[in-house]
Image (tube, rainbow over all chains, first blue to last red; front, side, top):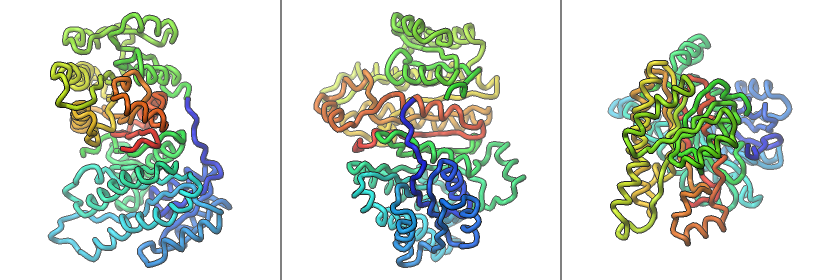
Amino acid sequence: MTKRQELSGKVVLVTGASSGIGRAMAKALAAEGSKLALVGRSAERLGAVAGHIGNDAAAIAADLTKPGEVERVVAEASRRFGQIDILLPNAGLYIPGDVADGDPDAWDELLAINVSSVFRLARAVLPEMIERKSGHIIITSSVSGHQAIQWEPVYSASKHAIQSFVHGLRRQVAPHNIRVGAVAPGVVLNELWGYTDAAAIDAKVESREGLRSEDVADAVVYMLTRPANVTIRDLVILPQNQDI
Amino acid sequence: MSGQLAGKVIAITGAASGIGLACARGCLDAGARVVLVDYAEDKLHSLAAELGDNAIPLKVDLTDPQSVAGMLPAILARTGQLDAFHANAGAYIGGDFIDGDPDAFDRMLDLNVNAVFRTVHAVLPHMVERGTGDIVVTSSVAGHTAVVWEPIYTASKHAVQAFVHALRRQVAKHGIRVGAIAPGPVLTPLVANWPKENLDRAIAAGNLFDPKEIAEVLVFMLTRSRTVTIRDVVILPANFDI
């Protein structure tokens, strides 16, 4: 009905690409004809995803919490593909549980990846996007960024930080034709939540208590393909029967 | 997207103009039968003639409880089923609260809030009985953030958001999905009531977008796997500063 933004030939940098939502997004975008800079901690697991995609994928192993790594990753991706059209900061950690029993060092690690690395990635790609007057950033948030969830206060706080960042950043860069949005899933049945067994995943999807990573990837492709004059700022996607 | 909604029946309120009409066209294009619910009878009939046999006009006064009571029976008499209900009809009041007309506030709340409750209440038993169904409400970005130039409107849309989020949890066990589309300003008759300087500025900056985009979102939401609910979509003109 309206002019779909084509993703063929676009260069996409996706973090957390070796598993879960990141891997599903990489595969979905490869099917759209995008070129992919895949970022993750494990070179071996990234290599498997890149191998599945073929020539249009580059695996860049990095720990984004280490000084200088975000900037190196963005520079490598730009060198390989010329520019970055789409940034998908997706890597994240999950820590639930009682604050009284929690490990503050683990929280720092979570905040470093869920929050700081996202800020740094945006900082690293924006100058060239602003210069080109074009770009799209979609951050993997969570329904936990839209409402405070009592069994995961630290995680929920990290995703609220992301929501604030998305809404604030969007207004800063919109005049440069750069779009910023966030996808906010409920329970996704992947490694981050301890689901690796295909039969267990199928059963939870069937009972509508969990999403497949691919459901989220489809939503992100939908957001990315809207016409250039439209931004989907937020999309909250839940398992049909998640009581939240 | 032809055929994606083949076999489905969707009722849309406020379907004779603006976002409702665009959504009706979008669902018809996707192969659905669409019940166009509106109060503007003449417009409904000329639209039905234009849109073809799958477009079913239904005159309802959403602010009249008796009229709403007749809505679902009239839909079922014509279609036999209702797969999705899009509570879309709404009114807009902007401007300084202190200068506003409280009777006009009441009329807006009747349509934006009370009519949503009443119509959804009317269609839910049918969906519960079938163990499936979709409720989509046209909300607004003003339901996600308090918008200074429209305090009454923004309050009405916050009410809608709270309703969607809470109702969803009540009816999820029946296989029913509930979600809201929250657009920024769309080029429809509603924004003609905007303060003129805001409207002029928005048009000049390309800050309004086509209601067809909302139709695309509706079809996207309705065509997800039944295991997936899209609860919220906030969709804005790319350069809208909110």
